[in-house]
Image (tube, rainbow, N blue to C red):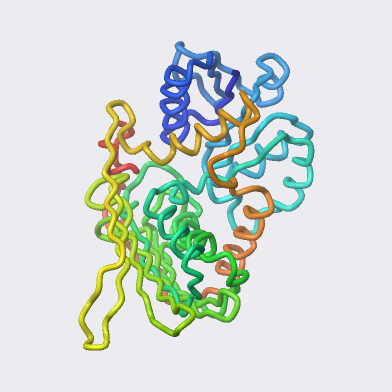
Length: 356
C-alpha cells in the first residue's frame, strides 16, 4: 500500500504516524513518500512535485496536508488521479476557485475530508441515540475554540476551526435538513503570521432546516474549549438535552451526557459516556487513526467504512457555508497582539497539546 503525503509538516506527520501504526497492526505493507518544498527527512522517499510523485511512486492514497492556502493548488494537480484522496479541512480558503479544482477529481476512487470528531465515540453514541429514539432537534448551539496565537503555521483563520462544529450538528441530526447561514459577526486580528487582519473569531446564527443554531468559534480562545449542546423532543413531547465536550482535559478525551427532567423538575440522567483512550505512540491520534483505518481498509480490502466518509459533496457544501461566513461577516477594527519588533512563535517541537 503506497501512501503519498503532500506536506510533511505537523499535520502530515500525524498521518505518517497513524498510517505507520496501522500498517503494522493490520499487517498491511505500508510505504510512505512525501512531497514538499524542502526535504525534511532521509527516512522517506522525497519528491519536490506532485506530478513526479504520482508518476514515479504511483500512490494508492494521497493525503493533502499542506497549509490551508495551498489545498486548491494541490487538488488541481490531482486532477485525473484514480486513487483515494484524503484532504485536511477546510477544502479551501475563502475566495479561492475550489469548484474548478473539484471538477478534476471525478475519477478518484474515493475522497474524504478530515473531520475526525465524527470518529469520537461520544459523537457516534449520540447519533445512534437520536436515530433509535426518533428525536427531533429543537435547537443547537456550540462553543468551539482554541489558542493559535503565535502559532508558526499559516492559517486561513477561524473558518478552519468552526467547520468542525458545523459539521457535527449536521452529521448528528441529518434528517433536519441542510445548514443555512442567517447572520454573523466576528473579529479580525494579527494573531497569525498569515496577516494583520485574519478572521480569528465568529459568532453566528444559522438554520438547520427549520431549527435555529447559534455558535461561537475562535482561534484566540485562552484555552481549548469544544462543546456542542443539542436539545431534542420525542414523539410524546418530552424534552431531552445532550452535551458533548471534546478533547478535555486532554486530546481525545470526550464526554457525552444526555439528560431530561421529571415532572418535579428533577434531573434524570439518560446516558453518560467518557472516552479517554490512550494507546502509546498514538497520542492525540486516536480519532485520526480510526479515520485512517477506514480509508486503509477501504483501499486495501474494499471494505465499507465504519461510517460514511465526508465525501466531496459534503466537503463542497461545507466550503460554501464557510465562504458565506467570510463574505457576510461584520467586524470592528482589528485587534493587535503584536506590539513589539518581533513576533515570538511556538517552536515546531512544542508539545502536542499546544500544537493540536
